[in-house]
Amino acid sequence: MFRSTHTIKRMAAGLAVAAAMATLVVPTALAGGNSGYRDGWYGWAVALTKQQHAKASIDGRSPDTRDAAAAAQQTALTPLDGRSPDTRDAATLAQQTGLVPLDGRSPDTFDAAVLAHSPTVTVYRSPGFEWGDFGIGVAAALGAIALMLGLGAGARGVRRSPGLRSA
Image 1: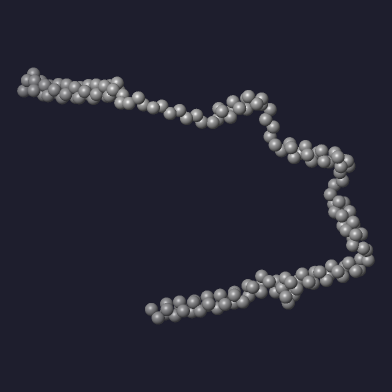
Image 2 (image 1 turned 180 degrees about the vertical axis):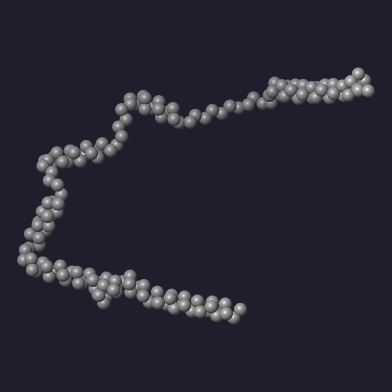
């Protein structure tokens, strides 16, 4: 008994130490503390900005020239489209409108199809008590009773007849 209690206490102490270490280590890891920057993500962003400014000063070109060069490099990565701007706009418009399914039916056919798929509810009011249905049910019940009585009487008569007994 004392041994299991000791084991439980030891495991609880180990879990407490692990939780304390996780509390201390995880925020540092999430903040980028292992990237070599003392201030985490902020320090990394500052260093990246300084690095970009250092490249810009070495480049020697004006910001407009650098932007134009970057745009030219970006378009060089995409395949050349030799169409005129009007043709490209028309193709884009045709592609966007082509995504809508076309319904080639006439308006009357379309309306008939909509009506065919919409449920129609018809409510019939009963005129009251249906005496004809009641008569049919009573007649069926009386017929079943008469049939049972007839079969019962016939079975009783067969049992009492002296000719069927063996000697």
